[in-house]
Image 1: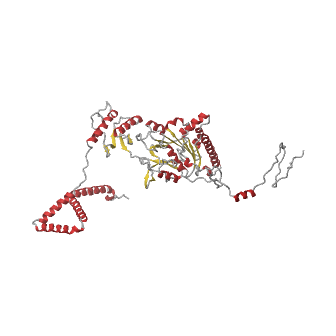
Image 2: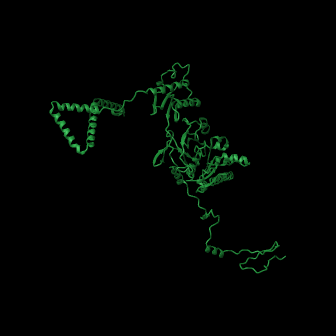
Length: 571
């Protein structure tokens, strides 16, 4: 059977629909052009009516009668004058056309004189980097046209560049990090200092897009984040490379912001974290924020090398196994952590070999948080003791299958004093505070796509998880609640997240003594009599100048006569 051709409406229906859509668009544009005067007059009449209504509303009630009489007189005069109604209609249409005109300011076709001067100076500064003597048609040359090199640009209210697209010749070495860093530094200096710029290199199109990043919010306090077990929020970042948002509270408001989420556990590729920064940059704040999140599902061991009491609020809380600030206590706690890691590995391995699930005591996460461990290194070397960092080798190397996570925070100047296992096994990195481009690249392993600035708020820096991109980071404000300089709102936010204090196993509490008197509280007389009645027999021994070595005292409740007989063994 021969195949019948499809109907014409089905064979080329797409082309007909496109042609019909184009005809409809053309007809609409033509109708708009023809009816534009009517549209303008109708808009003017609406504005005149609104103005008349507003004038009537603003007129006091005692004057409205006179206003009505005046309007009626004008209408009567216009009606009696020859050609009055026609002249009134023409005047009304003219006023409506004038009121209905488009009042939006005309957009300028190009930059003004100051903006042109700024773009020209930027173009001249890029000439030595983007020009070559053997180029027959150079895109960049002294005295050349900058509009060909900058196809897109935008300025902010202060007259500084807020967005710029830079075209560069194909022979520029955009694949070299040093060459790109020079261009980024030059553009940041010429566009205005004190701001952070984001650079996007398009190697295929030979274009560089420069954008100004908005400052990250610094008013985010410590709070309960909407996360699952094994997820820790390090802070907030830009929405450029993060596909997830979290609802966070800003005082009384709530917004969805993109977070930097660090995932730990059995399937984590970066189970341990290293945070470095300058003094006062917020590394202790980051550790407190991590500790408060870790206590929701696990146990925490804290080692404070600074010895300033930054973690005193966590002492004696549920889930906090130890808070050590001395060398002996830190060494003992880390030795226990290494032993606990080995025990968990052995228990999990035996369960796997027997075909059973791992024991429950090996599933609960254990967090080891160390603040400035290099301070103990110097103390241990001075006393001839073992470096506490050497005890981290087992938790760092075998902590992931044992649900043990290690977080180390120290200063940038002490990075060389960190042990080799710490630098090797901490794949999640955070740098807080001012830092040079070389320091950021040496710690994070890759340069950031933004220009670092000199003045940063506390908790502001960069983060990189494994081999991922470098993110800007703002750590939530988690100050020490026992510090007198802490604002009341931030102090209460941290106190609300602290777990309750640990209750002793026997449920007893130690009565507080009066420190001024220095003596224990008196015991009631009835309680004293009960103790005397329930007292056990007390052994009474005779007072002899030379008691025999094998003499045994006699137990009795009644007073013994004098002399007291002594029982001895028969020889």
